[in-house]
Image (tube, rainbow, N blue to C red):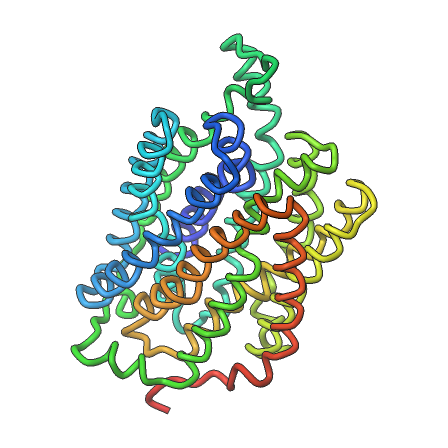
Length: 398
């Protein structure tokens, strides 16, 4: 069986579930769970914090055993268990516990999934964008269709917004559906055919060699700064939309321009990489991210923000896909999962933890605009510094 079908199915299902939770979770935690701004930042920081701890563990287990697709499926199942428990958690501490369980497994899925995809498609790793685009498609379908599904669900259950209560009392259903999608994604991972690239094992000392490799270490520094500035901004977006007079419907519609360019750009990311090179792709992504948030917070009305979201597709291709492709170009094939998860640990999880805490504090102290000025300006400056920060991609053996 060719790997393209189960890979496309995996990304479609996993990211389809993310399309339910990612855009709406901060609204659920703020209104339905009743968290303060600082508590919200604390809860949003748990996932990257636990990811920082567990990602290198799962990456090393995957590479040392050579059972990468099996590990990917098990991570999806662990995340599904945690997600199913979130709506049942009452109070800050129980909520932090079940989110921690979810993060211990789920925070590594994207990194290990990228490594598995690169290995399964090897040597044609430029096709990664093609299978990954199915994930964007699944994300788009769920984020755009969810408000309609939520209305039908709340109507069926007789759930009505009350004064002083949450605007969407049935919003917790996002976690239950996401858990079901994660189980189906695990099944797709288990169905991946074996190959030499998927089963190659790393050797003792490989990780130490990688951590002395200059291009890889400088990529870690770049990723840390990129996610420190702009991780929390997308998570706080429901609150920004709400501050401009919007609600759940406006937030959902906001994702139409965000995803309009993302699917074709991700699909053709291999060609974009060939034209711009790895550093050019990353500069484009982080610069577009910073510019988007500066424009959004400076916009005179909510309507202007819709147009600025077209930059989101550029961000995904340049930053998220670009980082995965750059990592694959600077690590040995036998360390594919380790390389992706170490970047996820330091360059993404650690930075995202600090970003959530910092921007949650800025939200409480200065209001909703402050996190976006901070992240936006930081992202634009970082894009200008990429020629100094990042060298050309090369593997340690080179």
